[in-house]
Length: 469
Image 1 (cartoon, one colour):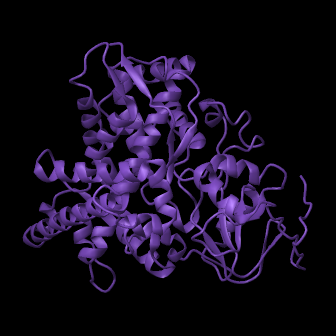
Image 2 (image 1 turned 180 degrees about the horizontal axis):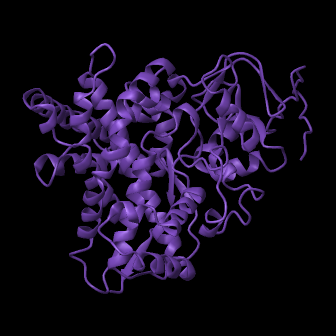
Image 3 (image 1 turned 180 degrees about the vertical axis):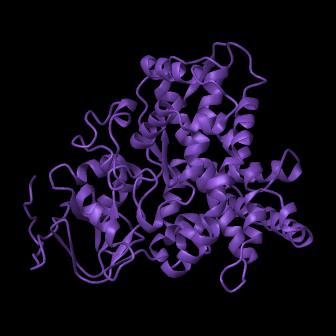
């Protein structure tokens, strides 16, 4: 493992200096935005797994990227201590989509309190209550399709995950409000997911309103409509919560959030609820749909994986029990392998070094902004042999630490919806595969490299499946 230093680095008595990526900052930023996976691979091509970069125009200049699990483990262990903080302001880029009150953007102390309020609906008995709903929505999705029909996997998965979110989070079923939110959110995501839309996220001047057909105007209009619709739902549900007793409350997440109070008896304001709901809509809908699309792609490109998975699903005694489905070991391994190759986020939440500290033998300095590169960790051959190949079996014989498998981030800022996302993916895949047979169309059954879609990555080639039975 090379520890050579690039000219211009300095050593500290606390540890080794961190090498600097020898590429001009403006080229780093463009490559990180437009070709992120190629950029991350370049970062760690000839160094030990810790490198100084200048890849983001929205972060302070002292940026450090990490792919060494031992350093990440120490980073997580020190998270929230005297030397390392996770200030929400470092994720300010997301405010244009999620709003300034999103849990992702809160200061550490406020984040801890908000997390206490938001965690219960996503775990335990509350999570189990969504099981039958998720399975029913997945089963219904293809009921109007016939043998020989071809469908776009991502569009179909977006439809299912949107309905899960709107039903489980908002308590909405088919109706005007349901359809208006669905259309407005789809419009906003579509604009932001295009190549130009990805640049809009990182360069504010491109988001200017330049007229009726400009992306800036279209995003502004879609966001205004979504805000109006969400605030209307909040007002309506707030009245219902005030009117009904606790035992008669609707089990949807919005009603639960409206009934939550902090230690001082205060609940969330309308603006806070709006931004948290927006976070759930964007983070919980789009990312899960993309992961499911990748899952269908990889499963149907690997006949042995499909065969083993179907043997497991068909061997289950009670297919109506969501808990039994989510405990299936090979199904869990398939989902984990999808999230390894295509993690929901490519980077962890940025941390800031508040005082000099040594992590994994490297000297970090006050003001350093540190990000673990999830994509690079998941491609380490010492952790995952043949990392570009889809091999679910790697998760059958080994348990990976939280510093090695980072599909939902790590530490105090780990994704609050991780359990729901895993639960949803397993139930939807099980329902679709058990009741249907598919094959990839010839154009879809080839190498499909990820491309940027807003903040995340998605397939560069549409994943289309033909229904066989």
